[in-house]
Amino acid sequence: MSWKISVFAAKDIIQAALIAHEDALDWDDSVVLSGSEIAEDKPDDWVLEAWFAEQPGKAEKAMVAGLFDGAAPDLAIEKLPEEDWVTLSQHIVRPIRAGRFHVRTPDFGPDTAPGVRDFAIPASQAFGTGQHETTAGCLEMLDAMKRRGTVVRNCADIGTGTGLLAFAALDLWPQALATASDIDPVCVGVVEDNAALNRVPLGAGAGEVTMLVAAGMDDPLLDARGPYDLLIANILAGPLVELAGDFGRAVLPGGSLLLAGLLETQEAAVRRACRRAGFRLAERMVRGDWSILWLRKRPQATVRGSRPGALPDWAKLW
Image (cartoon, rainbow, N blue to C red; front, side, top):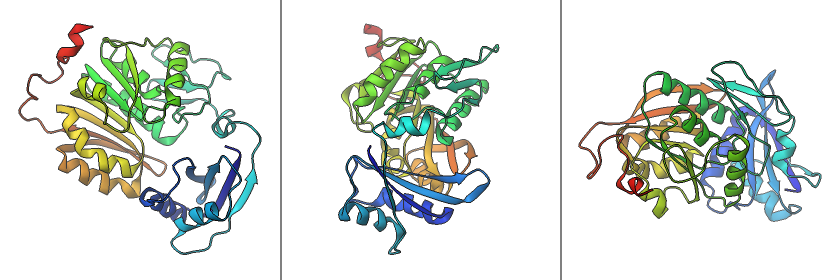
């Protein structure tokens, strides 16, 4: 991305714009949008940033301004160096620790302490290096699920980005089937590279990660590899609401659903949709302004042809 529009405003104004973005039917999906606080010591001062491949014109400016409910925000427009915007934003980030996981870029050395799983995730074109509150929160929640005795034999990470959450799940449950999917084809190469870097086996069997391109749950292989006793989705609140019914059909009774990518102000809507799909809250945490939700599907009659936690029949063929 070569150009950026920035809008500086109070936290509640930027968060409202992010919510408006999810409901904007005419938004150009090639435009990447994010919102965050300007500095740790200024938690109420936020910035909304939109990245463009070409210099934004009148229509692009109007698209961003339209997120602010009729107000006329001051738009700061700048041309960026010819370098990937994610790399620019992530190459100086420091390592993070979330549960038993230590996540870093290759610029930093590994954490070799006993009981720590170190992941090196280079800055790339895909989301999910661990530094964002939602990704770190998911890692922490996965670790908590393992410590509380959750058993996972078949899991999927929807909207995987870099593959980090799928890798972490497989580290916690090393004999599980693991599927990673993303709507963006560029993530295939990113996940493959990151798997090699972190010694994560790729393949279709137990203890391996299968990577595929899919929009939400709409994929024959993703459907065939189910049902799952753990689904992870660190995406956005709008898609989480839309996919809740699909998640309900894909998760085994008693299984777990780990959701992130939603602001705390959006949590109620996501939980309502998931409740209608048969899920109940097991635990929640808040990191910054973001909610991370662990939900469990109500125990009921088992899915025909399966038992909770069992490998699906197709897996026995591999």
